[in-house]
Amino acid sequence: MKTWITPAVVALVLAAAPVLAQQKPAPKGEKEKQIIITKRVIEPDGTETIETIVKKGPGAEKFDIEAYRRSQGSDSVRIEVRVIETPLPEVREQLDEVLRRLEEVDWKAIGEELGREVEEVGKELERIFDPEEGEVGRVLRDLEGRPRPRTQGYLGVSPLEGDDPKTQGVPIDVLPGTAAERAGLKKGDILLSIDDHPLHNWEELERLMKKTQPGQRIPIRYQRGRKDHILVVPLDSKIVDAPAERRKPRVQVEVNRFREKEACLGVYTSSYLEVGAPNTVRGANITSFTARSAARDAGMKEGDIITAINTKTVKDHDELWDVIAGYKPGDRVTVYYLRNGKPQQVEVSLQPCRDRSTVAPPVRPGEKRPPIVLRNPTDGDIPQISPLPEAVAGHLLVLEGFRAYPNPTTGLVTVEFRTAPKPTTVLLLDLSGRQLFREELNAFSGQYHQQFDLKEFAKGTLLLVVQQGDRLFTERIVLQ
Image (cartoon, rainbow, N blue to C red):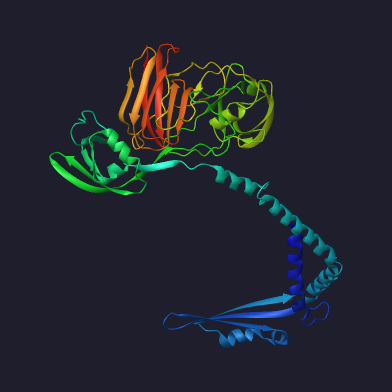
């Protein structure tokens, strides 16, 4: 940057030098005099006219200011006079010194240095955009190899009980925020046909929907009460599945296996589940320490915000979990964190985990899973939410057909609901705010069904949280 700035400054000085050099030199010790006269005339109608007169050189030396005031001044005329005396010889001497120094500049060396820097910039750009080794090339190859998920049209309805497959028509419920609701369909309506194809059962409806495309406008005939109606519905989009990677994935994930790790920092970190306010802190905020804590032994304190582990950035608890999961007990890592807004760093020797909390891997739409066995956490890196999430007016998440049964329970509990097909998070917390289970459904189909095994837990109460954006649904599950 310095090489670019120096020629620019020099060019400006050289451009100004000829102009100043043309000024006629004044005798040494004298000053050039300028007189600036501002004449304000107020007309009878109230308008004001301003006239500016500048006198310099011999005219300024001979100008009689007081005589001018007496001859031009009146009640409607105001005259302001400023006299400026410029020490021109001193400016001339300074300019001569600048020109002398410019003559001593090695312009050839500056040009060669600039040429080398331009050449280095060109090489760096070639490296970045290299199709095989450059960063841009790698990104383009990743995008090219990344499969595109298959999608279909989505209406946003679910079946109601009482469907008779021998008669035409399928009774439906309507999910909020979907194409069906926007089109005016209501719970209890009976779909008679879609795109002129008669419907007799729910399976026929699903089979026909698989042939539709997102955004497609399809005619629907339905019955409400004793009247038939016809409307055209623009369909939403639904991700059906994601095709297999065209190349071997970096990490092989087994179905129904939950994430495990061996090494821990020994911290509880605050949750970013905030109602009505987006999270503005990038990092994992330490709320407390486990009984055996490597972080506390290294001098870290509650309220410290972890921002990176070695070279890996940490934006929230999940990223902290993922980064630490790549290490073994005894590994030494550098923890970067903020304390009272000031950057800090410390080297920590990781300790073995005693954390038995559960974090569910992503689930594909329609995938069936066995009951999830939850463990009572004893020690390790798990998030702690304080205060507990609470659904409030204006931020309530509506779940259709929600059931958590049996409740109270002695061990097994089944959770099911329907809602809009948006990214959804399901949490189970104890009343101290510790996270026992977390599941992120980024390609959520709108229907959830899962059984949890809570036999290890003593009598008490757990909090179930379902979140979409800033909207929450909460339900307490009683253990007997």
